[in-house]
Length: 98
Image (tube, rainbow, N blue to C red; front, side, top):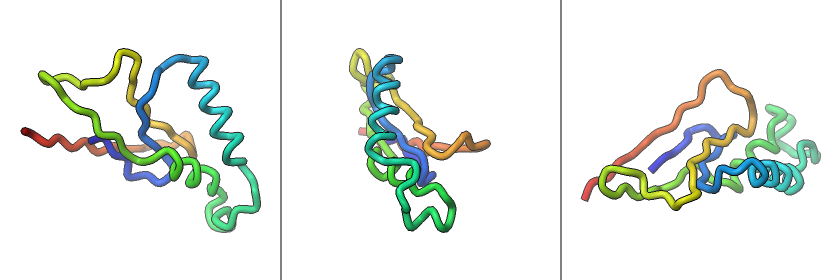
């Protein structure tokens, strides 16, 4: 399992293709506008980042087969920073054996 403890970042698995990534960024920004009179903006002014992270999720579980990540042919793991850039971000990895 790969997990981010940061509430304005996300972990996702998908294809690492430039056009798709550009489309993804546009759709995410269209779904959650940067400014929309969010209540949380009165605290940190980053409500859109929290909402986007909420939609994407903070973890992925990926099987390991013969010591390697068992991803699909076109799949990659993405750490998505939604409120940055930030100086330091960490992820947690958990391995569960058979």
